[in-house]
Image 1 (cartoon, rainbow, N blue to C red):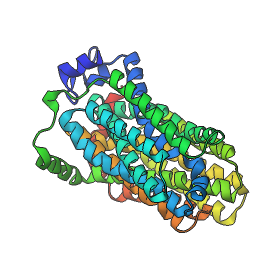
Image 2 (cartoon, rainbow, N blue to C red):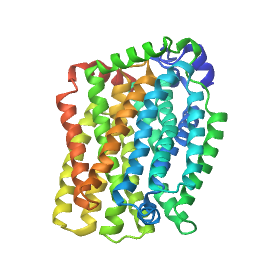
Image 3 (spheres, rainbow, N blue to C red):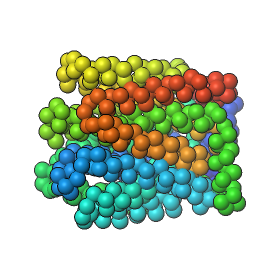
Length: 435
C-alpha cells in the first residue's frame, strides 16, 4: 500500500485526507502497521552508523597500545568516520534526488562492508584511519536516505513524530554498541569488532534490498546535473532560517560526539571503570537520550517544535555548565559527573528531532539535498568536536568544556540567527497537523 500511495501521488504532493478537510502527504495515509514497518526498516538501515561509531569505543585504549600510537591519533579514527559521514552525505543526498533512494543506500552499505573487512587487517593507525573514512562514506548513504525517505512521505509534526520513533529504533544501537564491543573483547581482540561490523552490514543490505520500497517516483526526480545540484545548495544556503536550524542541529551533535569520543578515556582511565562497566554507563546515557526523543512525541501534542527546541537548548546549556563545574571541582565524584552528562544527553534527545523537522519542512522540493546538507553539517561539526576535546587532554574537563560550548553555541544561534517570523508559517502548519 505504501508503494501504491507514493506511485499515485508522489512524495511532497498533498492529497485529500479522508474524513477531514485538510490535505495529507502519502505517509499520512499509511496504516499504523505500515508506519511501524517503515520505522523498523529505516531504523535497521540507519543503525549501522551508530554501531560503526560506538562499537569500538571500549577498545580505544587497547587499539592505542596494539598499534603503538597515541590516544589523540586513535581519537582521530573517530573523526575520520565522521568526516566520511559528512562528505558522503553531500554526495549521496543530491544523487538520491536524481536516481532515487534505494540504489545509493545499497551501494553505501556495500562500501561499508568492504571497508569493515579491510579494517580487520589494518597494519597501522594511518591505514585504520583511512578505512574509517571509507566506512563513514558507506554509512552516510543510510543516514541521508533515511531522512529523505521520511521527508518524501511526511512533513511538519508528522515528520517530527516519525523521526522521534526512528530515533527510538536507531537509539538501540548506541545502547548496545559499547556493550557488544565489550562482550566481543572478552573473546577476541579489537579487530574482531570490525569483523562483526562487516557481518552486520551484510545483514542490513539484505533487509534494505527486500523491505524498502522506492519512495521517490521518476516523475519527481531532479534533473540538470551538477548545475542543478549547485543551484539547490545555493537556494538552501540563502535560506537564513534553514541554515540557522542546520547549525543548531550540528552544534547539538558536536556536544554529543564530544561525549562519545571522550567518555571511554574519562570513565575508564580517569575513573577506573572496566570495559563492561563503561558499556553500562554509556548505555545508561543512551537510554536517557532515547527516552527524551519519545517524550518529544507527547510534547508535540501541546507545543510546537520550535518551543520544544528552545527549551531543550536552554536546559542543555544549564546542564553543560553544571558538568563543567563538577569536572573542574570534582565535587561528588563520578556520580555528579554522570548525572550532569545524562541531563545534557536528555536535552540533546529533545533538540535533535525538532531542529531537523523545522529545517526539512521548509524544502520538500529537494529533500535529499537538504538532508545531505543537514547531515553533513551535523557530522562535520561533530568531527571537529571529537579531536578538539582530545587536543587539550583526555580528562573530564576538556570533554565537559566542549560539550557545554556546543550546547551554548546552539542556543545562541537559535536566538540570534533563526528568525522567528520565518518559522511562523511552519509552526501553523505543524499545529494543523497535530489535530
